Image (cartoon, rainbow, N blue to C red; front, side, top):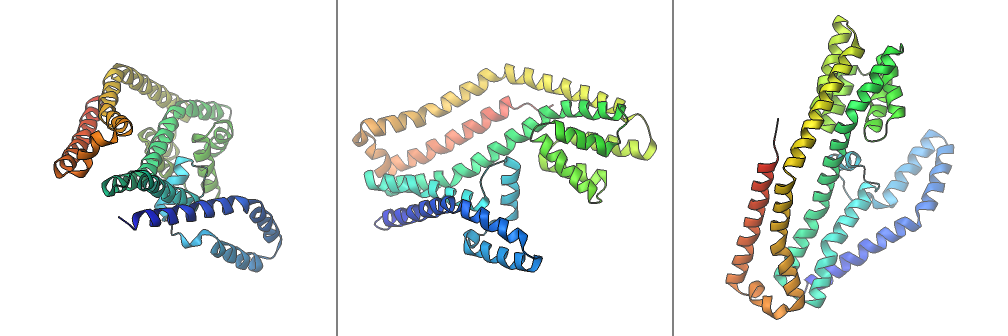
Length: 307
């Protein structure tokens, strides 16, 4: 127990110092980057590698983590996000150890702080993918109108990328760059569909590839797919409205025990002490946590209809 508070405070101070210094040096780093861009390629490569090693390069960020952050649209560098993650994991535990020393509470807070940024990242990715699906019907209308005006598919895609907002605009811009570099349409659109987990875009990719191979009126095909997507979104909205009561009830019923536990712990800490310090209390907490997770999963399974 003695080492938890000093370790948490040390990690907390380190993360805050690195984040503050990184922000203070941002302007200086930008100026150095502009100066480096004027130099020759060899000098720029050497200075770039030295600059990367001088800052947060000691943090190893996996490629999947970088891809998830890019997909989520988080306006932070991966290194800054990891530092913030460490801060969230250790700051509550350090404060709790200073005010209410408890080994179990500190461990729970650390585990919660470790899980929260990952959950936030998954939620951001899910919302971005859902927004992509909602924008896809309008994007098909723009593509169809451009094809009727005489544009090629690649030109129509570039036109849609300029006219539409993110995330679909950014994904289409990435696809246009890959097409200019020589990739085929099927591979490019399939990558976007896999990244956004979009079955509708996979259907569009198949339609475009078949049209390029055997011919046909692509604008009419896109109009048909667009209407199908709009009908499916209308059904999803109707189902979401019908299941709203069940989803809200699940959130309220699942949140009441945790809110009551927090409120009673703040109002009368001695009343909740046996729950945290006795073996029976810890067993009850563990059992309650497991039952809460099971309840959330069951209610989510009931209201999440697939069609």
